[in-house]
Length: 158
Image 1 (cartoon, rainbow, N blue to C red):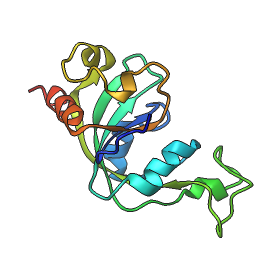
Image 2 (image 1 turned 90 degrees about the vertical axis):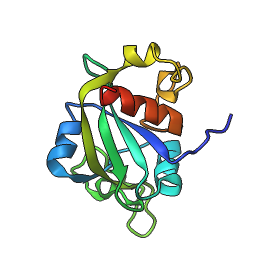
Image 3 (image 1 turned 90 degrees about the horizontal axis):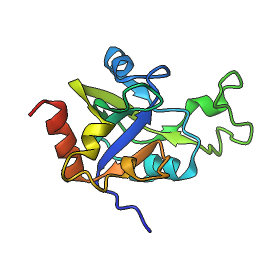
Image 4 (image 1 turned 30 degrees about the horizontal axis):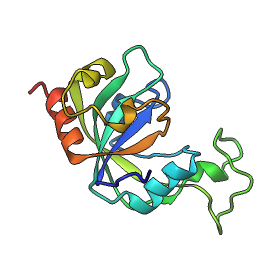
């Protein structure tokens, strides 16, 4: 079944690796290290500057959306694929023919209270959000505008 692309996204990150607080501190970062072809294609071919991204913390005690970022610019070759000291080095990739692409993400806001996975389960309008689907393991996935707005309202305490 094809995935509808809406211009709104959810990006998973492990907070011990890179959290919303790290993004707030840095202001902008290369969203590197993704090694899944479907996600690469989303980031390379479908993400556009200015589109909004929900930042979801995974592999942590409280799973959920902790804030918002935006796509800062068009995708470019992921710099980590060329670094032999990086965990994301890809010996089959070259600067002339890069395999992995990513955009930069720019910080927008941190929620006062995270929108937890449990809150999402209990909220009308989020019944079919991709991150809640069994077996959905993509680190970047589209969300609908309605899903984005619901999570934004919850995160802002409205």
